[in-house]
Amino acid sequence: MKPGGGHTGGAAGWLSRLLPDVLFADGYRRLWYTGLLYYQAHWMEITITGWVVLSFTGSAAAVGLVAFFRTLPMLILGLIFGTLADRFPRLAVLGVIQVAGMLASLGFCLLFLAGLEILWVVCVLSTIIGCAWAADFAARRALITELNRPENTGSAMSLEALSLQGGKIVSPVVAGVLLGVGGAPAAYAFLTAMFGLGIVALMYLHRSGTLRRTVVASTIPMLQLIRSGWVAAMEVPVIRVVLIITVIMNLLVFPYQHLIALVAGDILEVGPGRMGMLSGAAGVGSALVAGYLTFRSRPSTALRYFAGGATLASIGLVGLAMSTSFPLSLVLQLTIGACAGAFGAMQPVLIASSVDPEMRARAMGVLAMAIGTGPIGILLTGTMSSWIGPAWTIGGLAGLATAALVITLVLYRGVLSRARESR
Image 1 (tube, one colour):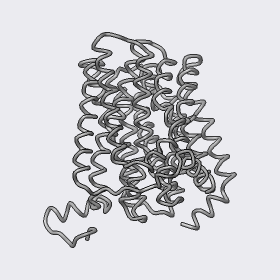
Image 2 (cartoon, helix red, strand yellow):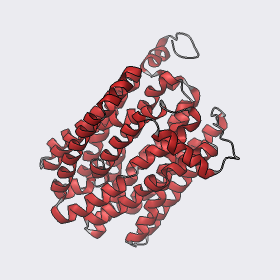
Image 3 (cartoon, rainbow, N blue to C red):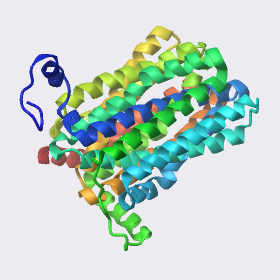
């Protein structure tokens, strides 16, 4: 039996038993459709831009610089975007995000159609897309918690992680094919169309009238809202641990995702097609684990999946940096993706379950700031790769992350133990 109905027979009943209960919440299901499109566009842009910049500059530092500007808004504007998502209709925020992504992608397309390879323009357009991503992170995840019962939050966030990480499977491959066949203009034209489809999906969601709005008193000054969100998040010990681990992962481990062109081109010496396959392998692993957690997630296991996934992902990245075999690298990418999928799925669950509903977008904004430390790691990884090579850089930083994670888990073992017992 699914929520809101009885048993169903035939093919429809068989299908309903295969789908998670959260997809039978009408509002969330419609929101989930829009996320599918947005996440596909997200990974496609990362793959396309990394390869294009490496192609016309030949510089690992340039690839890192562009990725730095794409992810910088998460660090400096994450809490602000979260506050805006608490103040204004979140569906309207999502609409602005899609329009910004479409216009930036169109700008990329026109730039390369004109044969202009201007790094600073690429950085500006990447920053616009980064702002959209930071705003989407807070607004979308706050909506997810609104549209599902508390006991289904883990499943809903796991399904969202499945959509996000599953985007790594197809989008990088499609991006590689488009780059090989039509170059940068064709790839960015396709990306523009993807954002356009996202706008259409949001219009359909708006007409459905299924979304609610969490109201924050408009008389409260923005600065006060921002401060209250920060204080509320930092007062919770579990959230502090989540933020510390998140910073470690985004500084030392995840930057390689934005520099996958370096792994493919410099370490493995393969072309854009295999680069897409390599990037997609991580998506397969993440999707498999997120799919499992969609059906099996329980509040009591959230911390275990979060911490264990982070530690094993960092260890796997050491192996990836050392590998010069493409098949072995695919297997390692699959493993890293699986561990990152567990980490990413449980990350917002731990945050959302620790604060009141009216504070969730701002709490997600604080989490976005922790994730936003990634630009520093990206810039560091790109610069160090230019000096000592990507293999030594990525492997060394991943080893450092493993040590930092172990130390953090040991120091906070009491907090984590009490948190598990309370769940």
